[in-house]
Structure formats: structure tokens, C-alpha cells
Image (cartoon, rainbow, N blue to C red; front, side, top):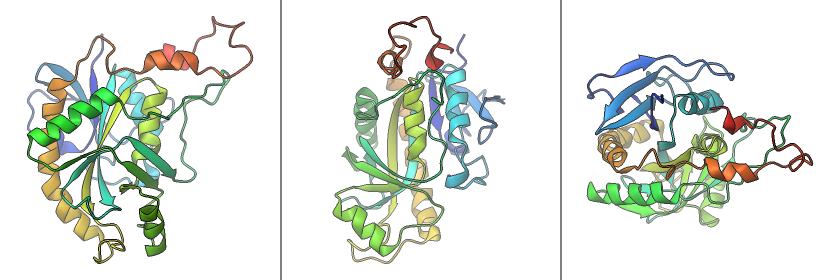
Length: 281
């Protein structure tokens, strides 16, 4: 029996006020996740919370063990993942305090372990439509019900971190028309996709990145934390409200079905009895 239906990558603020929270440790083939997983029931739904950076925010973005985190959620039974994150704005109309429900990403990271499919069955999972449409629709609806300005759609460019962008990099990203910049959406969201869990990102805008396009000063870590503190109370309520709307148990938010067509080696037709990774859960 699944211990969780919905997973949330977020800090202790999401579950600190919930009752009957259980802390469990999960072994994975990829080492230790960022922290224990915290299990709770939210409005009748079984939810797993995992602090992406550890409960005391001690793990920088380029050191997060994304594969372990995602594997842990899947092994507990999660059908989908809510993935909120602090982010910068690359466009003037996307202001600090706004939320963006992204529909695309651009990967500018380097050296991160970013796939579960290392063989022997060659597998190609397409991220063309990365974020789950139903989860996105429900997230936008929930954010707006909470009185928060929400941008429905946007591209998040994911940089390696922990450094911020140079002014030239920020201008380049802005000129491409991308809306959001962050350090953790890749490979986290894509790894969820690889294991057949629908995923939705909610980007909490804290700053104007380098300020090149908005006539503001370059971002400082202290500025980010100040805005994020205000946003964190808002996102907590949004996530809890969103959980109650997500349909589970009928496969509506799972993407496992799409993985059936991802085998890329010549034995695909002849060896249909081979056990695929996503079939092991």
C-alpha cells in the first residue's frame, strides 16, 4: 500500500502546522536524499514532504542529490509532484511577489546526474511537454483564488549555481524571452517525468535577477530571503489548497503510460518481456 499519493519538494513550513506528521528515512540506489521524508494527511490525501535543501537549508543547489530525492518520492507511491521554488524574474512584467506556473525549461546546468536510464535498456524520455497540463491548470486556479498574481506559463532557465548570473548572462536570458531563472528545476522536474510522476512547478519570484532589464540593482542573497519569507507563507497555503484538488488513484496525474513508448534500442520489439525501470515500483 502506498504511503503517499502526492509529493512536495519544500521546507518544513509546509508541514510544521499539520497534525500526525511521521518522519521516515528512505534508502535509494543513488544514496541519501536531502533529508528524511515527512508524511502527513492533508484534506484526505496522503502527502510526502521532502526539504530539497535539507531541513536547515544546508545543501546548495549544485549539491542536491536530485536522483535520490525523486526516487524516494516514487518509492513511497507518489503519483505526482508539486515543485515550488524561489526564482528570479527575467522580464519586467513578472514582478517580485508574483508566482509563475512554468510550462517549459531551458537547461544551463553542468555535470549534474540527470537521468535514471543508464542502461542496459536504452530509454529516451521526451520533455517536450514537461509540466503536467492538469496540474498546471489546478495550480493557476488555486494561486489566483489565494489573491496572488499568477502568470500562466513561462520558461524557466536553470543555471548551475550557487553563483548568480553576470549582467551579460542575465541580458542574454532576457533577450531570449525567457521569464524565470532558478537553480533547481533541472534535473528535478525531468527526473520526476522519467519515473512517470506528473510534475508542476510554481516559481516564487523574489527579485529581478541582475536588474538589467528593469533598471534595478543586481540581486543580493539577503534581498532574495526577504521576499521569499513573505512568499513562503503564501505558497504554503497554495500547496495545501492545491493538494485537495488533485485527483489521485485513477492515473490522471501519473505519466507512466507515456514511458511505454520510450525504449530506444533495437531489441524493443523482440524483447518485450524485459523489465523496464518504471515497472519496478
